[in-house]
Length: 461
Image (tube, rainbow, N blue to C red; front, side, top):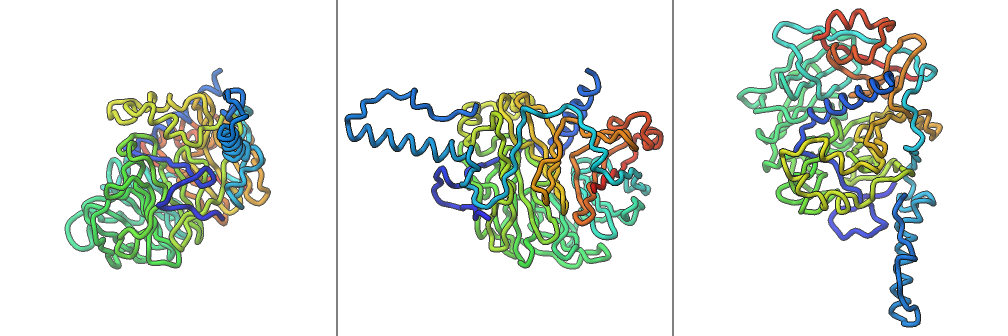
């Protein structure tokens, strides 16, 4: 793996992809992503790289200083541009996935990859209704659903959707929080819930009762946390161009009092407060591995227990890739747009049109990865990658199962049972219905209960 850098100058051989972000809440990003995927499916049913050119220079090579400058320019061009064509050795032993956005099918039948698909409702008890779903957590026996936006609740179900209990997290007292900012399962499989306003993390036991509280020494705002395996520390993501305690950085490694020990992924201070997409679930656990990813950044990271980031995968977009220094080339040139809270999502996304890159959704099991990208028109598409074969199996705007289930896959999966290659998403019936054909065995049930939350599980071979 390639150890990530922290606070020191960066050269062209270092990892220099920042991203992800911000003042758009994760809930809005989720539904915008769902909306654009749904529109892409509806469209399916109805109807280069800039390299340094020597011709751009005019110089007399007879003068030693000019000759030296010419050689420096040529060496820089080959090291920072041509190496990309030769396998990008700057990423060391990170696994390289080559994605060609110029050859993406609008619709792909992936029936042969699927073992089974199940759809079932979540049982809703009186007073414990869900309005939205921001995060889904899986244990061997339970399914935990977090609604950040509307009800601001965490509700526990069994793995077949039967209601178990609602967690009374918000309130007054040592075992309560002012609000829920994030929640996760620690390396022992127990729930932890975080609030920066309360300056603490609640740790729950097997019976979903508060076991203890971890108090932060200082009030530092992070939007996503996850505890590091074999450690009493945490990795934290600031949620974009917000910075940490005035410093322009995204990722921090915290001790057991949630105090910052090390930092990573700095960005230009001029971007502080800029608005851009933020991933729904940028930190997630797969066994004892922690993954981190962010919009537009083609690097998928593993969190190292020593307190840094290793590059696990390099997404090599070979057709009009987003500039490596896209923040400086694209965002700083349109800074007023990204700083304006009244600017629209569409206006900001238009800045990235003409390029291809990572769309900010990555979900992984033992053998497979689903990840989202965008083409030159900023239209989304999904890739299925087989980890063992180190091969892209398919990619398309609409991944379908047309042999038994007659549906489009809602590929913004929120959780995965890694060992079973089982991917899961939870959404209200009226949205799920948009993915189902009338001949689907799930169509009638979902159509009868449009306001009910449904679980879709997709198991791959």
